[in-house]
Image 1 (cartoon, rainbow, N blue to C red):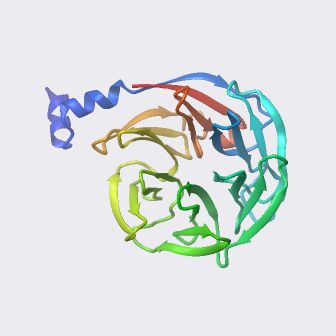
Image 2: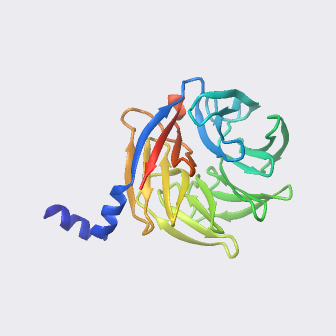
Amino acid sequence: MKKLILIALSGISLTTFAQSQKVTLKEVWESDTTLRTPECVLYEPKENVLYVACINGQPNAENKRSYIAKIGQDGKVIKLKFADNLNSTKGMGVLGNKLYVTEMNAVAEIDMSTGEVLKRYTVDGAQFLNDIAVDTKNEIIYITDSGTSKVLSLSNGKITEVLNGAPLKGPNGLLFENNQLLIGNGDGSLLSMNPANKKVTTVAKGMGGIDGIVGLGGKKYIVSEWGGKIWYIDSKGTPALKVDSEKEKVNTADIGYNPNTKMLLVPTFFHNTVKAYSVSQ
C-alpha cells in the first residue's frame, strides 16, 4: 500500500510505471582496453561499424593525442587509430562521406574513406565543445558548447549561434529526429527545440546531467549520465533508471545505438572500454 501511495503522489500512473519497468538492458559484450578514454560511440549503418572517439588522456586544450577508433559489432578493434592527432575528441556525426567530431574549440571534418582531417571549423569563444547531431535533410550540424551553455550550428562552412542562455545550463547530449533537436541539459532535463522557431519544451526531467541521447522511436529515449547512470524515458516523459555503475566507477558517456540489432553502445571513459547492451521492450 505504501508503494502505491508513493507512486500516486509522484504523479506517475501505475500503467506508465509498469511499462517503463518492462524495458531491460542486458550486457552482451565488452571491448578490450586498448580504447583509451572513449567518450562517444557512433553507429555507422553504411559500413556497419562503430566509430569511437577516444580522448586518450584528459579533456583539455593541451591534449593532441586523441583519436577515432573503428570497431566491429562484436567489439573487436578493426583499426585503433582511424584518425589521429586530434584534440580532446568527443561527439560525432556523419554528413555525406564526412565524419564530424568536436575538439575543444573546433569541429574537425574527416574523410571517412581515409581518416584524413580535411578541415577544422574553429568556434570563436568556445570553451568546451561537446556533442554533435546532424540534420541530414537540411545539411545542418548542431553542436553543444557545455562551457558557454550554447547550441551552435555548422552549415555551408559557417558557424552560427542557435541558442544561448536559459533554459540551457551546461548542455551536452544532442539528438536530431522528427525535425526536432533533443538537448541533454546539465540540470538533468531533456529538452526539445523546434529549429523553425527555436521554441524549447521540456520532454523529461529528474536525471543528472545528460551526456548521450538515443531514440527508440515513438518518443521513447535512452539517456546517459557520465557518472555511470543510464535511464529509459517513456513516451510520457517518465524516466526509469536502468544501469547504475557509479559505485564501481564505470562511466557511461556519450552512448550510441544500433536500431537493427537493438544494441546500446556505451563508452566507459576512464574504464577504457565500450560495452554493448541488448535493449528489449
